[in-house]
Length: 494
Image (cartoon, rainbow, N blue to C red; front, top):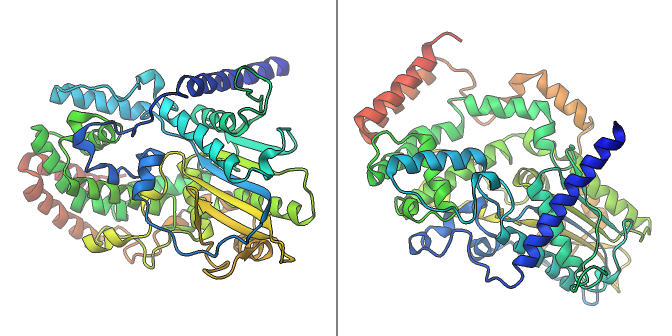
């Protein structure tokens, strides 16, 4: 009955906590290396691993943020709210299977770190260390605020239900509270972490309208992502196929080879040039921009409950409720990207396009190196001695960043200003209403930035011309097969 389900749920969380704790203890003395491995062939490619980068490596390539006003001297932090992506993980099961199929074709196999199919999607030992160290550094940055011993009321810690997020949360709090508890030789602290599958942190899976919107975009031949794949990524596919000596390398095979490289496969990394890597990273950025970020309003509007969570924290602080000092949220890239977009961070003057020049690609602000494994956004609320109003400091990946529309290089952002900015963007309808309304209006998912919303004869002709070019560029056999499949999908009845 209900008691049995609660017991099973509790045991599941207990097993996740124990596994994370053992991984952290086991790796306390290990030397942390790049998840891409120490293979020379990946040295020049690591800058393009984007959201698959380990935290430390990504920070080396992260573009500097805009100028911000320094926090006032002798500031007293009163609350910290943090949104944290899980640490480095193994490739997903689908990707691992694709990699193994590719290895069989090319006759080259190699270990992907410590990852087996059983570990697919799970936190790696390096990922646990990333989170453990992140927790320690947060305590070091805010020693006075976080000197308070753990209690359920003082520390509100939540995670999605996914094991890698829960493991990350446990590793983080192990570092945060190490030496303050009464467990074992390191003074570990027992901590309550609420794991949930809810619109607060897992909205990309709980909003039906977004799921529908995403499916339509992925199938739309006129989407920026699909245009880029047909016109530019196919050239990368042809070059990699030639190096691997595979005439029948599919687009899935190309992505499998690149994923294997990102996770440290030495022989498959050797099949990519820096130019290939740059194009693959931009392809990933196009995907995140149009499917998770600024490309369509629903992408970031669905983070409204998370916005409400942060607004609620600021309300309590302004009401002088000091009972809670930290709100820690552990989730995924699909959580951070919409939220950063909601805040207006990393926004380019113009939308990212499949046709963007190489110069524009290199100058873009929307760059997936901003969101490696363990990426984090920390919002600290503080009192300044000579100011009557509370101020806010935002740190992304532990570096102070400007809050768009709030404060500048010479003035701090106040809590009331930040609340006004967030509140002015909150929609009048609820999360549930938004999902239902959009689900009933599929046309709302059409691309407002482009004129060709309907799949007419002009679009068919343009796509056909692209396919003819693909035949020449990608090799007759591969190009012809691709063209036939696309033509069949255009004129075959639904």
